[in-house]
Length: 67
Length: 307
Image (cartoon, rainbow over all chains, first blue to last red; front, side, top):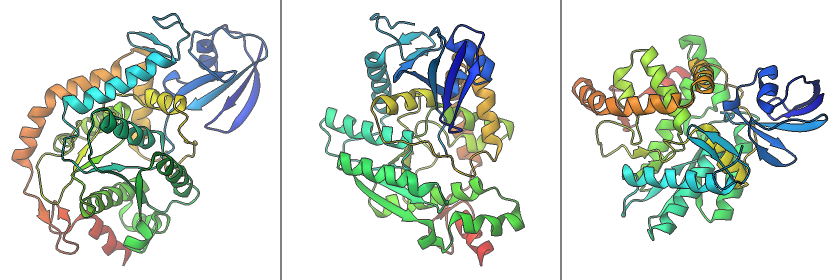
C-alpha cells in the first residue's frame, strides 16, 4: 500500500510504499524512534497500534525542541 | 489502543494508555503534585518563568498561572526571555512568546545579549571558538544562566521557574556520569543548586517528572502557539547523542528515563552533602559583581576573549 508522510522536522512530504500493518511497523521502516514524534492522522492524534490503510496520510510532529 | 474510559488513546505510557481528557488531567496533576511535594512555589514568592517561546516554557507559564489561580495565591508572576542573538531562530520563538503572554496577560521582559555584551551569539561564537574550541552551546549556556539570574534578581524574583523536563534531566544526569562530574550533578534535581546565596535566585523545575513527549502532547492539545524551528547549533555536542541513546533504550525498555531519575533522586542527598564539602564558598566576580566560583565569573572570562 501507499502511505503519504509529512514530517515536521524536515518539512517534507513523501509517499512511500509500505508492506506493514500498523504505525509501529511504519516507524520501523522509516527508522524513526516513537519517543521523538507525535502521530497525526486526519487531524487526530493516534497511537502506534493504529492500523493503516492504502492512501492514508500521516503527519509526524517532532517532540524534540528546536533548541 | 483505548483509554480505560473506552475512548481512543492519544498516548501509551508505561502503565497504560490515556485519551485526550484523561491525559490532560494526568499531566496537570503530575505537575501540581511536583510543585507541592518539593514546595517549589511558596505563598510569598515572586515568580519569574524563564521563557523561550518553546513548548516547555509556554506549558510551564500556563500551568504556573493555573496553579496560582487554583490555590488562590496572589504571587506576582512574570516571564523573562533571553535573546542570545541567533539568526533565523530566536526572533521567531520570541514572537510566539509575546503573543502567548499577551493572551494570558503575563508581563514579559526580554533581555538582549547584544545590548548586554555588545555581541550576539552568532558574532561571539567564531571569535571564542578560535582560541578555546568552545561550542556555541557552552557560550549560550553561560550567558543564559548569567542573564536569567541577574535580571530575575533585579526584578525582585524569589524563584526562577524553568521548563526543564524529565528528558532534559535524565540526559544531564547521564552526561555528568560519563564525565565524572559528581559535584556538578549535585546541582540537578527539582530544586537547583547546593548552597543558598543572596545573589542567586533559586531555580525550580515543575516539569521534572514530565517527559518531552508528554509536554509536546500537552502543548499540542492546548493549542499553544509553538512552531518547530530548529536552532542552527542544536546538533552539536554530547547531549544529542545521549538523547538518541536514551530514546532507543526507552523504546525497548519503557520507564528507563523515569528509572534514571528515581535512582538519581535516591542518591541526590548524598551528592549534595559531598558537593557542599568539596565546593568552595561562592565568590563575587571582581569585574561584574555577580556571583562566581572563581575571582572572575565565566561570563567575564568570555568578555575578555571578545576584547
